[in-house]
Image 1 (spheres, helix red, strand yellow):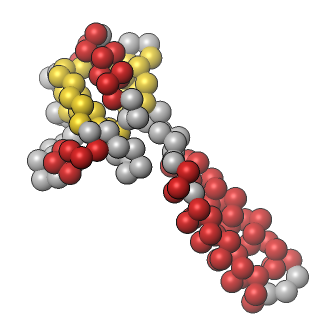
Image 2 (cartoon, rainbow, N blue to C red):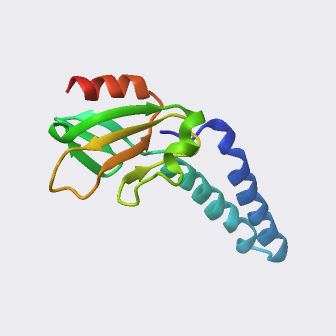
Amino acid sequence: MYVTWYWWPLPLIAAVLLSAEIHMGYPGVRAWLPYVVIVPLALLLIVRSGRTKVAVEDGELLVGDAHLPLEFVGEVEVFEAKDKRRVLGPHLDPAAFMLHRGWVGPLLRVQVTDPADPTPYWVFSTRKPAELAAILRAA
């Protein structure tokens, strides 16, 4: 779930402006050091926020660091971007597992059928919800 291109400029401009502000106040090494530290740090944060993995591997649904065996996957529902507010709003169960990325439109809700698991369902963003839902339903 990589970060779309139009989310990159604002943090990078903010990092350059912050570096320039520090640069104006100090001569010498402290003048260029903020550019070397703050701008790459902003890049790293953008890349890290978009490195969430959603996959089905080895009989498990992997969403970020969480995994759910496919035998405990129940009903699978696809929600488009226009329905996000309803899914993530007041009807969201506080015990649900949620991994939402604002820059990714569609959501998937997967019911958890494991009686030992206190999580009723998972709600997560994915760029290809129909394909993932078909794979989960087939499994």
